[in-house]
Image (tube, rainbow, N blue to C red; front, side, top):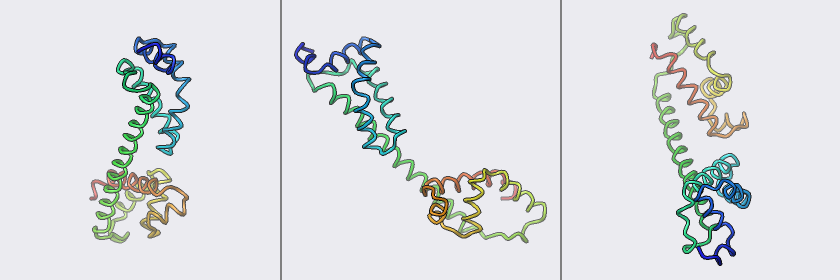
Length: 190
């Protein structure tokens, strides 16, 4: 890097020092750009916790890859913001994949529930009824509540989310986790 680029971009000098494992330069670089990176990440992700994690990931990558920065190809702030943007895009894609996988799993569990022949309490022996009651009682209260509203109250996931003032995904996850626990607890009867 020429002296001119160092004068124009003090971050370039800091990156060169970070590449030599200068902790002081790393701290100074953090102080200079962390707020900007966080603001950009928060704008892209709309989630404070994820934005904080992205900024942490970006600084880890800066620490590990500072020697790859080439001032001839661009200014250091653009390089750092590019890393931030890429990390945010990775998060958004991961979020979309998780959402699709989760929705597919919930849809599949709803299909399994609707295609199974419904049981009534009279179809079960008193011992089996006691086992079912215990399995339900062993669930966390939020899962008990969501399952009761869905299966005994006949409410849709969206209706439950509206009543409980919770995100739809939270309700679906709660029901899914509860049903998986019930399946595990009642495996001998399935």
